[in-house]
Length: 100
Image (cartoon, rainbow, N blue to C red):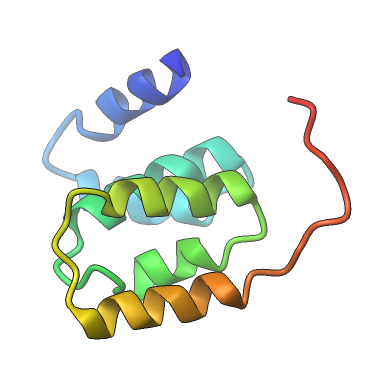
């Protein structure tokens, strides 16, 4: 969890946060994608905008979880909650267990 806190601090270091989050969203590193997902979920004006929806469709479960965690505390309209439920219900089940 300390990596997440450190990452959240790093992503907010200067006023180019959105640029950094956008570049991290396409990173090969799932941890960088998690940070981007969390940031967009917290700061994107549309709670399920293109970046958050992109994160919710990521193959890495950690990225999807970070996006949902970022949405916590936001007031979501019923239509947005419905879209979120649809995205979550479409989630493919993985055939492995992460032992990280």
